[in-house]
Length: 133
Image 1 (cartoon, rainbow, N blue to C red):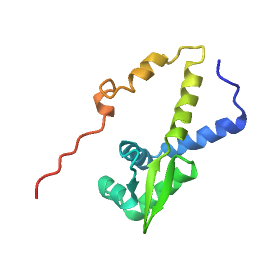
Image 2 (image 1 turned 60 degrees about the vertical axis):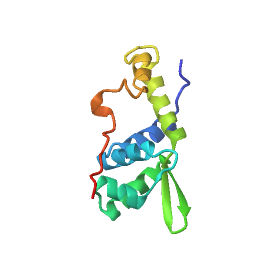
Image 3 (image 1 turned 45 degrees about the horizontal axis):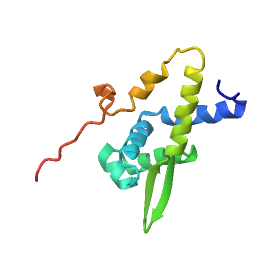
């Protein structure tokens, strides 16, 4: 049985889910997870997602405020990395609440999705092929 959660816990997880609830931020976190552990600088994110620099900065700040990404200065650049510990905590919260006693969501089905070949094709990252100049 999962531990009893306080109101503050629910608020924390709600804020993190809200941060991930914006499509650009979800795309950014997915790119950062694929780039883990190296991470990406804002210009790389901007280039890959075709976003304006101000929009990238705004969304990265929202993710950082919820501790979903970490930032490290490297010279004149800021390198952003997904925070796997916080993401694991968030997934653990969801699984513990969804799978606690009711079996509404079967844990084994969720764990199967962790295998790269088991996730539905629409969820898998597309391999982008660069055209030769």
